[in-house]
Image (cartoon, rainbow over all chains, first blue to last red):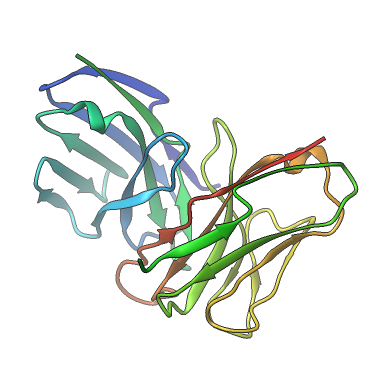
Amino acid sequence: GQNIDQPTEMTATEGAIVQINCTYQTSGFNGLFWYQQHAGEAPTFLSYNVLDGLEEKGRFSSFLSRSKGYSYLLLKELQMKDSASYLCAVQDSNYQLIWGAGTKLIIKP
Amino acid sequence: IAGITQAPTSQILAAGRRMTLRCTQDMRHNAMYWYRQDLGLGLRLIHYSNTAGTTGKGEVPDGYSVSRANTDDFPLTLASAVPSQTSVYFCASSDSAGGSGANVLTFGAGSRLTVL
């Protein structure tokens, strides 16, 4: 079966760095996405990785290792507004998205 | 502001009643999707449409139907609501139905449905 695993919840301190991991087992791979979802709001697109390596976009970076079925989202210089759920999703061989349950990130002052 | 509009925002519904969730986009995206989001689970695809006039079943289509008469509108109908359909429903769209590259989704704000 297809499976996306990510931690349910993480806590970090304002100004610090946090890494949110995602492991996947899917039928085929055509890219991995990270979305941010604030409580009660819609998910919004953060990043897309299809090749191995690190993609940097401001305070946020996303890493992919296809051979290990592994990705992480790195958030630097954490701000209170980064408190949200972070959703990992894999585009399978049919270009359908398989979603993880999301990681709730709590930022403490 | 370009985007996706969903209605209603929230609804409480008696079991057995018929309900249509509305979704309209103004980005001229070809593909549209309906997802449900439940606590502890990932987003689950209910139905999708790759282009106007076509629809397809997702992971959890039972009890739901959709239509795509034009590019902009993609309503989701619950013919006879049951309590297990209590959820938050998100409509989404993308300008690519896949085939190459990133299929980035734009989501509506969601419709919270409670079936009693």
